[in-house]
Length: 184
Length: 100
Image 1 (cartoon, rainbow over the protein chains, first blue to last red):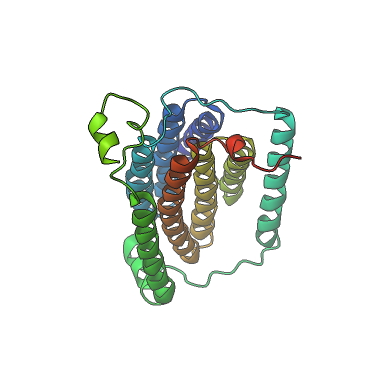
Image 2 (tube, rainbow over the protein chains, first blue to last red; image 1 turned 45 degrees about the vertical axis):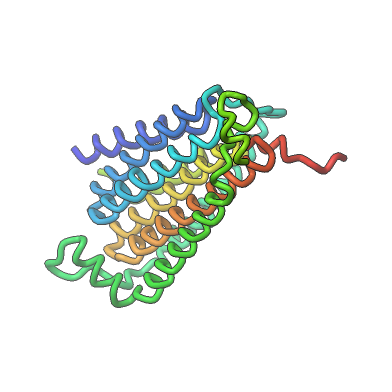
């Protein structure tokens, strides 16, 4: 049953992400990306990483995709994007080659059996409990640094996107909204 | 029986898809989508390794990757909006100012 679920999820994720990479329509790309992320959280649940799966659902599918959806409103993306490609096969060759090299580099320690378990899960603890035990003891400092980083990112987002927010970009070249032009 | 290698091969495949997207895309928003795919592939590899070696370190790193991805989206989209206000486009070909 788990084998069937893995292959089903693997095929669906690969197909959806291929749509994301190949599609000309931004809305299709974003929707298939969100669906692929939901299915990846399904793989996390199969792996027994329950808390990670829930975080993936909340943060990626809930927050990140919502931010992308809001950002889409700023850009004129209702029509298909036009992209110039000089040599499409070279791109596949380069992308695949670089990815293969990186994967071999990072998989080499696993092949050499040089990976040892440093923090095995506590006996009798559920996955969220075990994650909390490790996160708030061994990884407390990175956790705090990550929180500071998120604060910095929030301030940066507000400052960058909020500048001159009172000037409407979409109404700038049109005469439908004369009030905006006068105020600007 | 699904082994660790199955997950690592799937993760490598997804990473390759994301990297092809990064090389191929000229629209900056679509390029961001491709980076998200690469981050997700790394997360999947971390979670699979963590599960099969009975070690929680992989899941910890996956959490930090998710935090980094969230901040990357916030800052990146802010910069993207500034670029769009300046040039009126988010196509990479329109930002080519060096002629050679």
